[in-house]
Image (cartoon, rainbow, N blue to C red; front, side):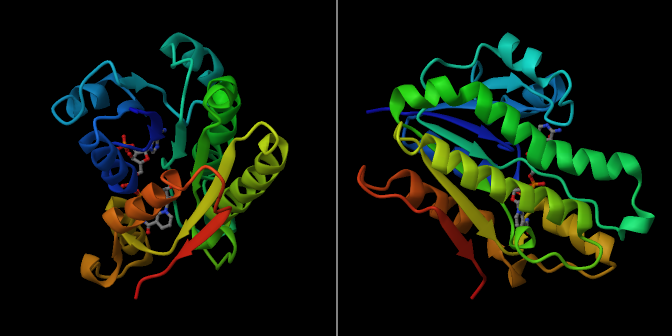
Length: 229
Ligand SMILES: NC(=O)c1ccc[n+]([C@@H]2O[C@H](COP(=O)([O-])OP(=O)(O)OC[C@H]3O[C@@H](n4cnc5c(N)ncnc54)[C@H](OP(=O)(O)O)[C@@H]3O)[C@@H](O)[C@H]2O)c1
């Protein structure tokens, strides 16, 4: 039976690889993107009305934006793949960079999950949080990003405990460095040359998420960590 998947961050990288794989199956996709301009850019790839505008950095207006987006009443899968990173030591971090990482990587997933819970309960659906190995080990210059991801893990753990009885499965995926636009930017911020061949692909992370979404009804994977071979 065709399933409905709501995936953030489907405009590039891991979210895009996942959305493409699910589209191949003929499933229904709902893809929040940050602006109408992004809707226009992604129209060639994904058909409307699946593309909806939700700027995940604007957490103050997100609850109202979600109401206006008329998200489906039944959702089988909610995947949080959107994310941002700005490397800097805390003392050098711009306040708005700290805030935007916490907003996009933590507050928005909390608000979106909260909004979608009734629709997920109807299907006994799955929520997948794309976290990061930085969510469990925080190195220098990664403070705001790592803090946002550590918080995201806690959010997932709490949600899993709260919704287990209602049948919602919650999984946190911890990829290490993955060859995407984000990783190219991280290398730029680290002042290093970027060679995508050194890292696992977005498709490999997406394949792991697909595996989680395709699990038999009687089993769940709470957490999975991915490392390059
Ligand atoms: N790449 C890695 O090495 C790595 C490692 C571990 C974990 N992760 C995590 O994996 C997830 C996916 O990242 P990626 O590597 O695939 O990076 P990516 O290619 O940069 O994709 C990030 C996505 O997030 C979206 N996004 C950012 N800010 C947004 C906003 N305000 N509103 C709506 N959407 C927004 C972007 O939209 P636009 O296209 O409009 O910018 C983009 O589609 C992230 O959560 C990241 O933290 C990545």
